[in-house]
Image (tube, rainbow, N blue to C red; front, side, top):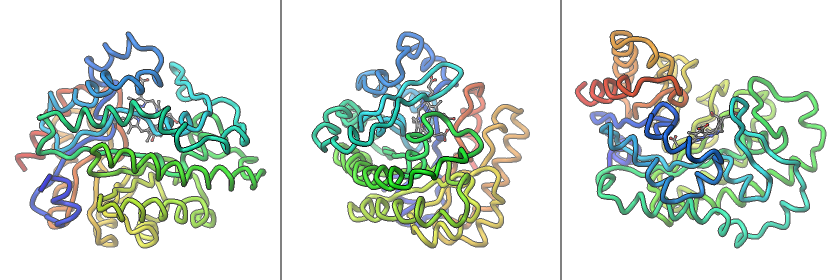
Length: 333
Ligand code: CP3
């Protein structure tokens, strides 16, 4: 069985699979070279030859357990006909939100717009380099995508005070997102994704009282769909106040934790396989410190099914040598 399946399905505690969020990204010079020649990020994601190449870049350097498709969670708003741009030193910038236009998007329109992503998955899957490894597909959770679509830029640290004003709009978009996220996941699975990760990057911005409506209910429907396809699903509700309650409500196959939560508490409270946790900043320090932090997580989860990963994405200023050191250290542990 492939390493992440061994952990999530067999609950094997002796193997510690390893991969990194944003493993295909700006810290790699070979990525930056391609990126320089492709200033339009959306078009880059829609170029299946280049996205295939970028997906495989980290696997050519490091002995990772999985590839994650090079794409973005904001390709779904793009597929729903909202304009999405990525501006240098600003991040994502979304166009005005026209509910009528989004309501009129058909499954065929959506599939056609995002087809290159599925072609990329098929290409990656056919490469010998990942024969014994997992291929991770992903989506943004309904809440996180709803937030980008309404806010039209990164929320950074807080939700606008008038965000919840137009309840009808929120409800309609949420409904549409749930439908199209299921379509997007199904397409990824059909083309070879054998694990799905759900990124709820802004789950931590919500009040506890809003979690059932915006996080638990819509995410549960998608998780149940993925499970019905016999594909394991990992959820990453970043900075959510109560991981245990999230796990009890959603029952994913694995839970990815951020770097602010105490891994010892998680280990005590949560019975399902755990992923991640280590602060991406540690990769900017020195090898001794990295070894110390990695050992901490490996010790805490030594008799628990655990996938080694970070508590958020690899930072652009990371030296690839530090990733190399960490992968070797975890594999030899
Ligand atoms: O060169 C560049 O400027 C591109 C940087 C970049 C983005 N997305 C833009 C972006 C890269 C390398 C990606 C790839 C990406 N994004 C992947 C590829 C696979 C991998 O992990 O290697 C994945 C899985 C994502 C997922 C993603 N995109 C998440 C979870 C989020 C939400 C915010 C977060 O960081 O958790 C995004 C939005 C996004 N895409 C941002 C940027 C710069 C963040 C903007 C913000 O702060 O709101």
